Amino acid sequence: MRDKARGLLAATLVLAAAGCATPTVVETRKLADDTLDCEQLKFEVAEANRYEKEARKERTVTGTNVAAALFFWPALLGTYANTEEAINAARERREHLLVLAKKRQCSES
Image 1 (cartoon, helix red, strand yellow):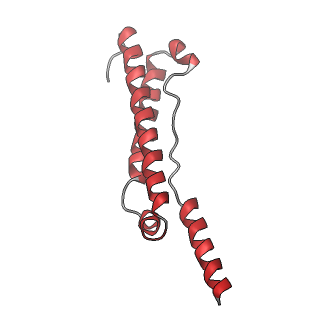
Image 2 (cartoon, one colour):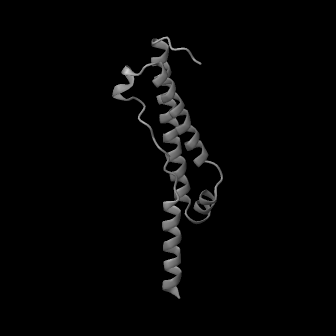
Image 3 (cartoon, rainbow, N blue to C red):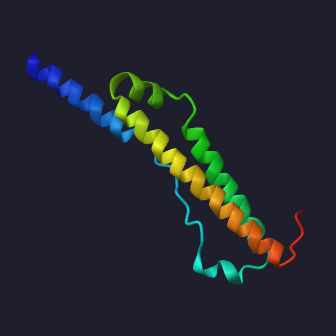
């Protein structure tokens, strides 16, 4: 019986750890950024916005996050750390791209 309880606990910990959010952390600057035209910059800004939105979504109350909080709270801390890094990277990427767009006098539409 004791082995069964240990197995259940181990399985729960593995599932909780596997359920940690791993949002995409984008590169804030890419070598090819200086060669992007206005349309490409607009697309890249939209991508950065999408990545930030996805990272923010990982912070919402989900079944996985609730389970992590109940059974393995370090996983929840990991989720928040991962999402914070992804959100900040997406913001920095967007700001970098907007500076480039301004230099090229791209319209905001």
